[in-house]
Image (cartoon, rainbow, N blue to C red):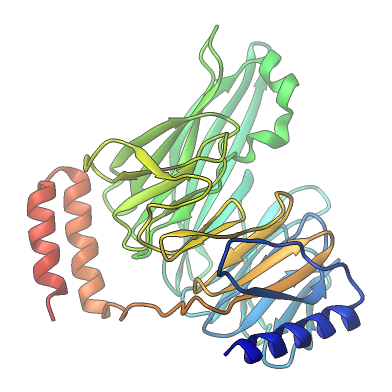
Length: 377
């Protein structure tokens, strides 16, 4: 086993050497073995998306490319550079956000073969693309109106089905004072914490920005049930807060404060926020990637540079963009084996009772009992 790891390490070092780019620095904890090797150059700031099913990386390098992992030969898809990319749950469709020369946004859908199938004009500054199903896409966008007393910010949720807008909801409205806006700049209002969608794709977490007079601006971390529109306040977080994600079972949210400390809280009145991990040892039961730090097997496994953009699909293979290059990382000792997925019927039933819980129609105890019956096999 040890000889096998040495051979793998030598092969990755050789690939890095012939790739002609700097090695990605990884700080590994004891007994962690994570290899990295370069895949492609990438634009800065990096824009990319991957999917474990189709094994295709969509990336921007002054144009849109597809990079299949099976041969690592990238092909051109579009000569424009999208600002956001997102694969659908089954990896059959790619959503890409483009801005024209006037700054007007549009969302275009491509097949996994690179064929464009739709283009939809939208409004506002789009901050996130989240797929709910193979046919339904969620967009987060901010709209701005400037006045003498400040700038009005409207946070919107837009739902598209097969490229057609079917609903637009206002999530939150606030006014930013001129003093604060001058200090942070309009680009910071795109969202400090990127929205995330639950494993069952029925709930989302996002932040609402508040700027009360005579007080320091802050964010409220919110969980929203998509079907019922019910919302649950998770925590008040500082503007320097970073990532927030759902736990593997979708029953709690994990987020990072401005000091990098992890917190966790069960949803819909389950408990109070509690420390989730220290810098050395995690209390989390699941394997997660947050703020460029990989946690697994009950402990911190590795951390990457603070300026690297890191993502994962399966908890074993990671993509990291750093200094104009895109790297593939493999956690050798982490199995990354997913649990048996729910059937479509089971997921639909579970999402229904989650909607009831969010709306207050059933208690947490009743929800837990119903969930146990649904998942009994």
